[in-house]
Length: 192
Figure 1: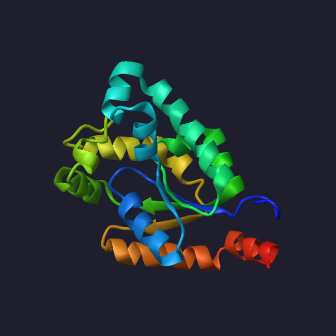
Figure 2: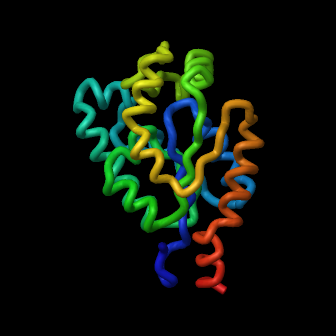
């Protein structure tokens, strides 16, 4: 867990694109009065180009290295609600960073619900964000990616189903999970 004299723990939201990490995360940040970090946006700002362009011009490995670098920075600041990119937990060292610096919460949805959400979503910041799924995000590709990432995603301390939940309902569930977590209790005891 987080050291008593270190930064306040973060809440890390993990899961595939379309689970609601960003929209629900923004709402959780409002509920808790914490800053919100959307890692994909930070990566684009830092790189000066869109994620699809990073993949095209620099490759996935470069992108994953940027993710890891930004995760370390965010972990060092603490006290944030963090919407991670869908692939962040794939690297074991990223899972360890999240575990040691906060509470990791997995947002879960069925492949069918994810497909519907992704196909009907408005691209964030005016462009597509899913270079590994494609803009049409076929159900079978989503199912395969979920299976491939199951081990990484299952490392989360808490899972919250989002299929039939509004972003506000998911945010309330995240805030409740945070307040009742050992991570939150130990950080409150350390600071008080």
